[in-house]
Image 1 (tube, rainbow, N blue to C red):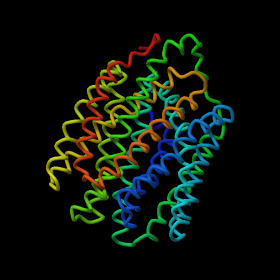
Image 2: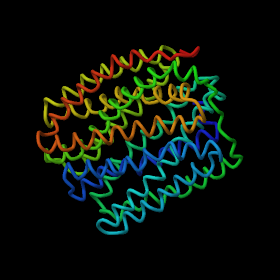
Image 3: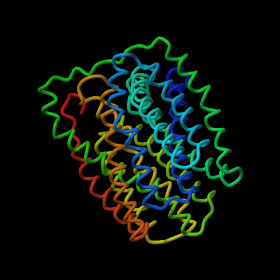
Image 4: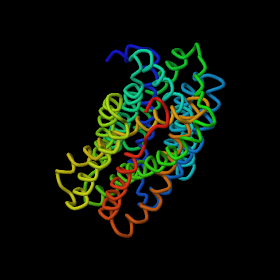
Length: 380
């Protein structure tokens, strides 16, 4: 596709791939370390909060200092502390893994803005499509990461995972080179009156984002433990988590494409409503080869709304684009993590099928709310 010939876009897309390979290896690694559902949920929530709650701050800084050091520094920061997490035993390693999450926090707002800007130029204004391709790169990382992690752990155990930081080093230095001009981000010039008119929109957007994020957090973080409890190997439960995110990557691109052609709220609402079907069926069948179809389908339909929400937030929230991206991304990640603590305990007490039924209700609630997302600007 033409936009991948843009050196800045291709660099931030590759950076996103690498960052989310790191991020997505976490659930499989924690499962391998024999943590319980509650421990996985709590630790994953702390990790996600460390990444999510600091994103607005990093976005604010990059709006003023330029994107170069946040983008490249985020990748290299994760490289250093992920390596330390693999080399240090026990709690010290887990703490380093949490610290590594700050690199993801620094990278995401900057990368989202660079992708949107590239879409405005290289794709003749198709910013949602560009954003979806950027997030597809990250979701491909979430697809590759669990599968790759499961295979390595089965064959070489934890030391084998050091291949990931080795690969990420040239990615970080490539970003340093491509973003060397360090152009500042544009400022959203929405007036105070426009902001007030959009408050109801922002509240609805936040609620839809929270429900969608919670649903995806339930799936990607607890599926490995569920599949393991059904008697499957690390290769299988790692592959299943990867298939969910692979489906999410594909759905994100499809959602971004149609979000540039049709009303974004209609696309988001339809995808969320349809996602209830594979999630509910998965709750009823236990272990079955049908999960190889149902899990990626659920990922595709829940993931189709990601880029739509980011672009809508960039339009309506005043201030720098990276700050707006950091605010919505931070909220998405943190709300999913908060819900995951609750559902992790539910999975331990009532079983993962119960959580899947609850997740079905979440997406069914989010669907009509998404339909109410009427942008209060000329760009609706």
